[in-house]
Image 1 (cartoon, rainbow, N blue to C red):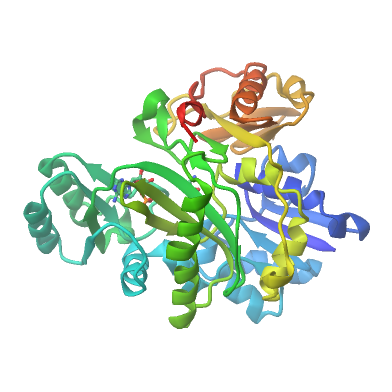
Image 2: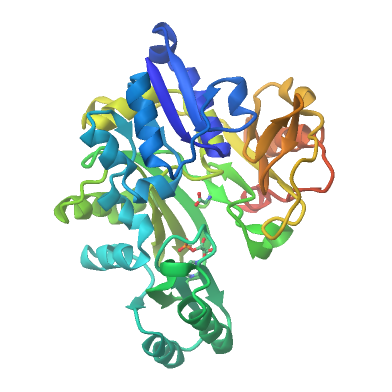
Length: 429
Ligand code: AMP
Ligand code: GLY
């Protein structure tokens, strides 16, 4: 079997690692490729130097190699239609189609779907004219949330605590075009309070099989201070999501969204990731992503016991009703080690030390994100560099083990949060 994973982050390292354990993959004379990959992925798969946006080259590569299954990590190729192009060429690919991925690619679209199908979410309006957006902000007052509708690499959301900040945000997005065309339309919505939870599920367009819950830590510094990042660490499960709330999320959010997308003529197949706010009035959807989360995937893959290839093939063939997914009952924690300065400017090319020591620990995986090989050494090559992930009997053990592994690894200017999982420990659940 020949498999191609598209992407180069910690999420893709975790997917590549999990795919390699698939019985189906192992029992056939299989080859695993990753485009473009990173230094960690290169140790277990063959990296191909093609960028994730270059769908034409990815397609020619897949045709030339006779790839049996392609798995797409990031949102950019999904929203650009990689799945449609591969399917048109008769190739099997796991991910949301272009029109389905619009649920992430356009917040205005995603909010309209939520409104139409009665999915609990923040009250909102969408605007294509700056002056109207500003009048609405003034009428509503602060706190209020201003979002660029299009893809902005996780930076297009401004949670404004004052009216002035909110107006500045509209001007920055629509006037200065800080996120380019992603800011042609803005979504302005009610500020919701609560704990955030990431809820990911496999779906074949009808059946929805949820993964365990996970909680990300978006801010760069401890105690949720400083600017937003792609995610600085995750724990799974999230105690705030009780069994009862999980059922509500499935019934009120996940199933109606998948059914709604089908009714819209945009059948949703792949991973649907709901960013939830657990408010006093119950779970509400903040946003949807059309893909696995990063770093949520790292602890989730360590907890997944079933064969991921079987699940992905069942999604493609629309027979998820045949599948049961088994999960490890243990908790998992991922601590992201980042380059100093991230999410602003940061240095690349620092040698990473201690990787071998950390790798010797049981039930610990050091997933690579921004890393590269230089003169035989692993060096930093991005903002988020590593996702050190551990399993443990309970969150406390997983936290201790992840931080023990983190303490063995070092480079010049490394930064990581010291409080990943602390909130789960103080939760009553
Ligand atoms: P999004 O990309 O829409 O999930 O927004 C990014 C982050 O902004 C979320 O993870 C939340 O922390 C925050 N956020 C988004 N929408 C709201 C909202 N309506 N109320 C409060 N915080 C929000
Ligand atoms: N961890 C946030 C995301 O994947 O979007």
